[in-house]
Amino acid sequence: MTTWYKQLPSIFYSELELEPFPDAQLFLWNTNAAEQLGVGVFDLSEVKSGIAMAYAGHQFGHFNLLGDGRAMLIEEFRNKENEWCDLHLKGSGPTRYSRNGDGWATRSSMVREFIVSECMHELGVPTSRSLFVYDTNQMVQRQQLEPGGILGRISKSLIRVGTFEFAQYMTSIEDLKFFADHTIQRLYPKIQSMENPYLELLRVVRDRQIELIVHWMRIGFIHGVMNTDNMSIAGETIDFGPCAFLNTYNANQVYSSIDRDGRYAFGRQPAIAQWNLWSFAHSLLPLIHEQEQIALEMAREVIEAYPKLFGQAYYKMMYSKLGLNFDGDESKSIFVEDTLALLQRHKLDYTQFFRNRTHHLNVDLHTHKDMLHWHQRWCTLKDDSEASLEAMKIVNPKAIPRNAWVEALVRSVDSSEIYDALAAFKRATISVDDAVEFEKDFLHDPAAYQTFCGT
Ligand code: AMP
Ligand code: MG
View 1: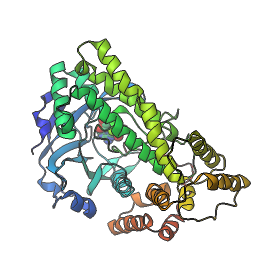
View 2: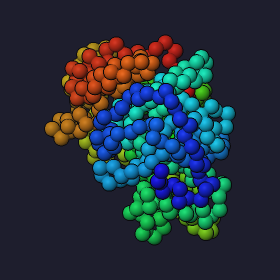
View 3: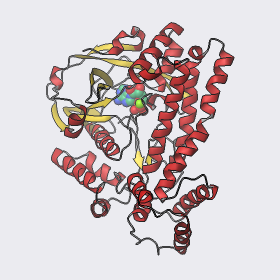
View 4: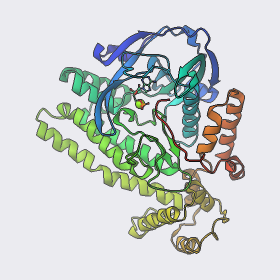
């Protein structure tokens, strides 16, 4: 295998042989992703080795040394846009970083990542892509024995905030610099020649995170475990563990079984991204300036701009959802907040509410008198131009992967059923009639719905 990662000092990774999977069979293949990314055929039996990446991370606020405990980087290639991409296996067996884990993954959790990441891509959200799922035909011990699976995922890079934390905590300043320079060269070559590329890296990662989280807020995505090791420097959605989607709007919504305090609740995602950026900034400080105090001030300026920049991007998106002009009129942002409060108070479906406004489906207007009142107010504020309506159509998804739909699919043993369901989802993102049909059986979560990490 060839990859730029091997140019790094050896502390950054661990080389390993891939144990053969004599009974493995291809279960899912993502033709779309393969075509779009220019990937030809893939045969698991030809993969002999790879590298597990070392990283650290703040998990629920606590620092831990981590690493790919059940994943490995096996290849890098250039996609059709000539950008570098990494191909990883997930669920491929134990590594030096497995700690207490077994190194395996259940097929159902890998199918879940395959489905959700593909839907995220369809919805226009930056994300790692899933290329395939293999059925290992070996059982994995969880609460009960379950079929094992291996996912092939493609990302611009799986360097995380936690990889920088690892570099700062575990290596020398020279190694940290070497790593940062390589990351910049790989992901953001344009900033190489800038006066302070490391400060610029902080700025560009901040901006990518803003863009990403605004997308999540747009479609009602809850990542579920926004630890710094799950936050990508390339600004993609990665590590689909306990993620889920909002049905009825609730800023405090949490699905993950381990997120007892709601640290990663839907409405907290913007603030958590800023918290994570502070961790990133800390690991870059020695590179930003040799005097720590000055470095801190420089980083502070970048991070403290986050709330304002996030607010601008967020309200711009929310204004588009509501067909409002973005003209700096304060009363419109109050209207956005009032709209969300209305949704929360009356437990209204987040996706349907905005979709119905976009496509003049007024079936829900008479559900509450508050709603009629809201509608009158909206009519006085909205911009009825073609451009505004077009923006609403782009920003408001017609359909999302409903949790109940995802859960009904992940245990399917019939790959054609999964392909058909993904094709139906794709149609639902294009036509409202198809969207209504697509979601009708899946609007409500399974009873006491919870999601789980690392299954
Ligand atoms: P996650 O919450 O899925 O992002 O994983 C957090 C850490 O746990 C990462 O370092 C993973 O590699 C590791 N991990 C998760 N599941 C397993 C497993 N079954 N075996 C070994 N390591 C795991
Ligand atoms: Mg992770």
